[in-house]
Each structure stands twice: as C-alpha cells, then as structure tokens.
Image 1 (cartoon, protein in one colour):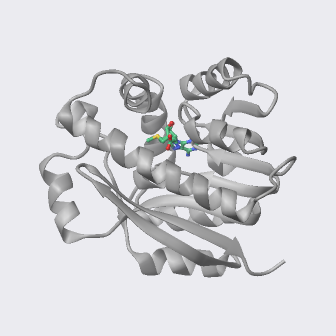
Image 2 (image 1 turned 180 degrees about the vertical axis):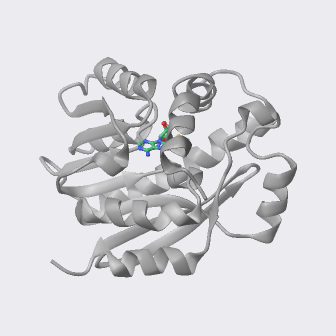
Length: 231
Ligand SMILES: C[S@@+](CC[C@H](N)C(=O)[O-])C[C@H]1O[C@@H](n2cnc3c(N)ncnc32)[C@H](O)[C@@H]1O
C-alpha cells in the first residue's frame, strides 16, 4: 500500500534539490537537451492556453483572488498577477516558493503574489480561481481523487488543472524513458482515466467546461477548466 507521507516527502526532497535545478532550467532560458526542449515547449503551450482561459473566465480580474497550487518557479502565478489577480502561490518545496517570491519581486509584482511553502492538502480558504499545473501528474490514482476534490473545495469559481491522461502508448513511453532518462532523476508520471476526473469533479459540485490535450515530444498532459455548478 502507498505510504502518502513518504511519497510526499520524496517529492519534496526531489523538487527542493536536484528537481529544483532541473525544472528551473526547463522553466527558464537555460540551454537544454532535445528531450527537455520538448517539455519546455509543451509546457509553454499549456500555460498560454490556461492563461487565455483564465482571461476569458475573468475579463476583469482586478482584486479577484487566485491560488496557484504547486506554483513551481511561479510562471503562472506571475501571469495571473499581471492579469490583476491577488495570488496566493504555494509549493511543497521551499526552494520553489522562494524562487516564486523572488521572480514576482523582480517583475514588480511582489505586492500581488504571496508565496509560501506548504502541502496543497493543507491549504484552506476560498478563491475565485484555483490553478494546479503538472502537480497531480506525480500522484497515483488512489491519491488523485482526494487531491482534486480538495482543490475543488478551495474554488468558488474556476478550477484549472492538468493531469496525465491514460494512454497505452504513453505508458510504454514512460516505461522506456520517463521524463528523464536516468532512474535517479526520474519523476514518475501517473496516468489517470477521464472517468475518474469527471467523477471527482461531479462529487465536488463542479463540471468540466473544457479540456485540451497538449502533447509535444515528452510533454503530454490534459488541461482542464472546471467551474462550480452548485453554491
Ligand atoms: C513540475 S512542477 C510544476 C510547477 C508549476 N505548476 C508550473 O507548471 O510551472 C511540480 C511542482 O509541484 C510541487 N508539488 C508537488 N506536490 C505538491 C503538493 N502536495 N503540494 C504543493 N506542491 C506540490 C513541486 O514541488 C513542484 O514545484
């Protein structure tokens, strides 16, 4: 049986250590291998699509609140802040939260982005928009439903998230290479079936408004916009 605390501790240690350097490079402008360039390119497409959807859902976001759960280095937190949201950016890995705060400060958005280190399952409150990108892909299906329901409970309007859609071809790709070729660097990607996503949303009083599959090289996710159907 999966030990949840141990799984999270392993992710925290990865994203606060070697994973921090690797993902900062992918999310920044460092030189990358061909494999990682496809991850950077796919991630950029996913983020720009999500930004357009957030803009359509909140044409006037001034003073609306957003939670960016698993903010990483803050790429989407800063995009939301530029759009007018007051953003709470949270990440399991302290180094990621520190990087988000520094990036917000450097972009002149320090007053719009409050970054801190925490497990998304510990977050409380209510936000107009909740985003969670490329985080749930690291959690197996027995944890996925609970985490998605928790994120949904924090949103009074829109929920944007990604998951790794189940596909036999991708399962084979992950077996062969994963995102990173060396086992000690590898972050396992957990594939989830769409029926589980729809069920978790329905159980949380949300419905799936739209989704888009983003696939480039080694980057494959399903981006989802859900909105609240019940008060
Ligand atoms: C692949 S990065 C994605 C970063 C960012 N969302 C983006 O798309 O640019 C995954 C991030 O999720 C964070 N994370 C993983 N599990 C988490 C949890 N339970 N609570 C909060 N953050 C988590 C990791 O520390 C890491 O920064």
